Structure formats: structure tokens, C-alpha cells
Image (cartoon, rainbow, N blue to C red; front, side, top):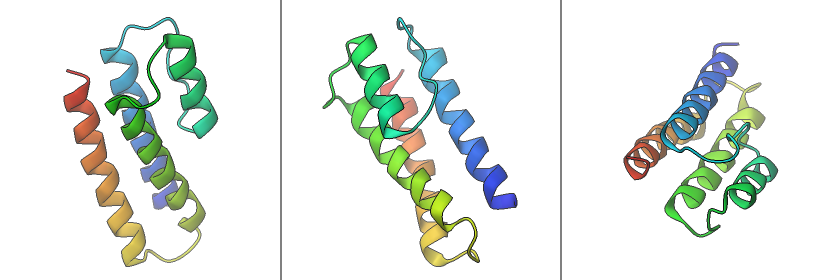
Length: 96
């Protein structure tokens, strides 16, 4: 259960930083690939921008954590969780 809460907190934090630092037509409402693609298209952001690339990487890593959340915490899970923190920091820097 803690893994689920941790993952949801990470997602909320990512969405909050994107939506507070970027003033676009539409807020980013989720971190699925489809949600990110829609947000990029609606807001005229290029799909190969730093922001887009980081968001897609975060989406992949969060999906991995979701699939592994029922398992015992593995080294992969811990590593991916750390990578998410690094990507979050990169995203925050890009959005300044």
C-alpha cells in the first residue's frame, strides 16, 4: 500500500510542477502516454522538446512501478523510483 501512495504522490508532484510553471491552454491531467500526447498537441509543444521527453520517460517509469507495486520492493523498483526523482528534478529545471 505504501508503494501505491508513494507512486501517487510522485504523480501529483509532477502534475503540479508542470501545471504551475507552464501557462498553457490546457493543464496536463495525467501521465499516461495518451494524456501527454494530447497535452502536447493542444498546447503546441513539440514532441521532441526536453519537457516532452522527460514527461514520456517519467510516464514509462511510473508505469513500471505500477506493474511492480504488488511485488516485494526489488532493487529494480528502488532504482526506478530514484530515476523518477532525478527526472523530476530535470523537469523542474527545464520549466524554470
